[in-house]
Image 1 (cartoon, rainbow, N blue to C red):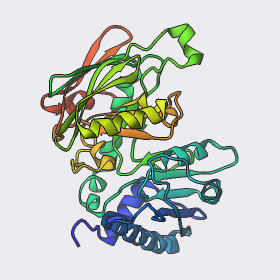
Image 2: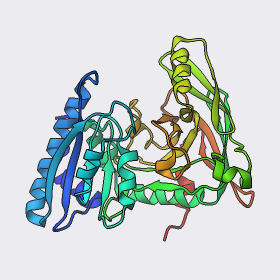
Image 3: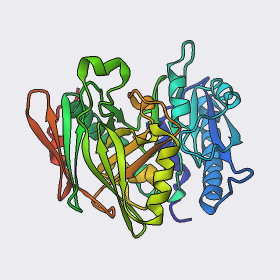
Image 4: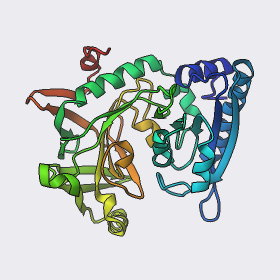
Length: 359
């Protein structure tokens, strides 16, 4: 079968990324179509893939001494919409949860790792496809970890970012008062939460929430974020870290305007992310697209990745070299005024990352 790892390859991946040990309880978590949330071919294949992973982990558990179970819950219908309390209570019973879902459950699962008296870690895999076993899941995750940590070290001292897009638009992101978060592909210890496939580092822009505006003032984030929807170019005009205008006369733009009007928190610029998985490829699946070496920007919820804004959604837009619109320049500005070019017309500057000393 195309894109299907052998049992031995899966075992190697599971040992490297999860390192399950004797006595642990593991849960494969899936969501299910229902009512007006309809099934699709990719979703069916994902559930089959989840069963394959379950069977491999089950065999590993016989030798190592851990147990593995499965659980399915009704799909939420929206990425990062909260899962039910019933489902949360079930996942709390496990040491490792691998969520192979249609809709992202990251914002529901990530906070559980911080709860007292729990030994909990999780890997969120919304939209994962079997073919990724031949691309980003097949990466050397020790190298993915190195690149992610290098980006984290660089972003730890930044206060801003200047971005140029291939269509000529420009965006400045205010990155004051925020800490970066690296997705290393390491889900081996309690408290770890990763996306899988892994390989990115992100930072939330300064959002000027009420508890920080008096001290730090308004956000300096401003510019234009271009987005391609099929044949339509939509331009999001941004000021004070919020989408203030949607520019386009297309029917798509009208739907988007309505979407933002329904809940103002959706206008929040929530993330600057940089993918660094060398084997990731652009296919239109955000789970993998955001790991492709290059830039992605998100709007909506940021609280699950270190920001201040709670919302009912979090949506990434990806700009690697293979995307319809590319980020052709990303320069970050450090507290001391120095500038580091992380992306140019040739893509992510791996040579810059390789010079960073990681302890």
